Image 1: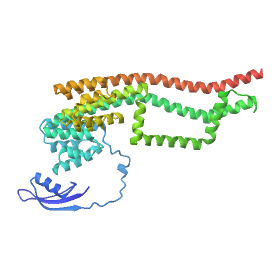
Image 2: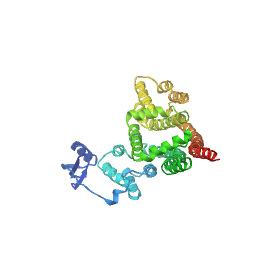
Image 3: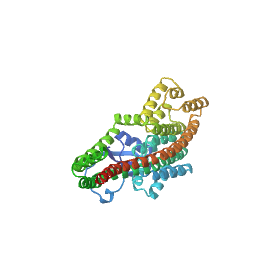
Image 4: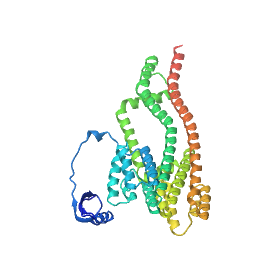
Length: 409
């Protein structure tokens, strides 16, 4: 982005100097005019690219913490609602915040506001911190003069989203730990325990001893892993990296999300979660005064599922052609019928945002119940799976020992 230095004079003919990173010269002139400054000279500066190595920032995350963002949004809402000027509010929050990443971003935003940019435009330069929903709601709040109310709703939405993610993450922590332990235990047994058992069995029964099929399979698998671990482990790691890369591509993401919606227990949770996100996000944007088509476009990128995203994009096309959103949603099998019915009520009464808030509350409660049910199913299933693996290895060891002991008798 270009950097401009300017020299201007105010109404009292005092000289004012500064720098700004607005996109072009005309934008700089317009920004100075909004500050009642008369430009004297404007020069474009070329930034020198230098390699820098800062040990203090080497292990420091540049991402703003979610809790810091929620706190900032609530503080800004309270200060704007109390009548404190926007620039003063931002300066005060920037001064006292403990989040270094947020402090740096706010410092840049304050400079943009001083240069005449709107708050929404200043936020839009940091998409990693302020997403499309945040930026568009702030812009709508600025246009309607209800910025404090919009910021309060944003803070509530951020808190609800964080609480939902925390519940899902905590429910999946225990099964994930069990899976990791099971994989490590399997490789540990195959690499260190089974080879020792193979030696013992050969000593007892001799090289020509007849062993059960399950034992031969386990010994063969152990021999393959022991002999070619330097190929198998990197190959498995490469496969895992390929799957992760593929899932992050557009085609892979759609295939993965389609697969999830076919798994009996998980698909219910995913559908309810996507519907809750749709209702909450679309309601917030509508209440902020964002146009329906724009709200659908933004919401489609917030539901978190490629199939729902495609459905909402298509819904936007059909709404643009004159159909009602409730009729379009009703024809889509991804959305439960209650969503279309509530949307129809909202369209008739002119309270779509209020109705969708109730839908969001209902499905967020359903997500909580589904998460608890899923964790109650996954935990015993993982225990059975681990027990089965241990039993398989135990059987492969005990059967030949029992057979050899009978031969000895």
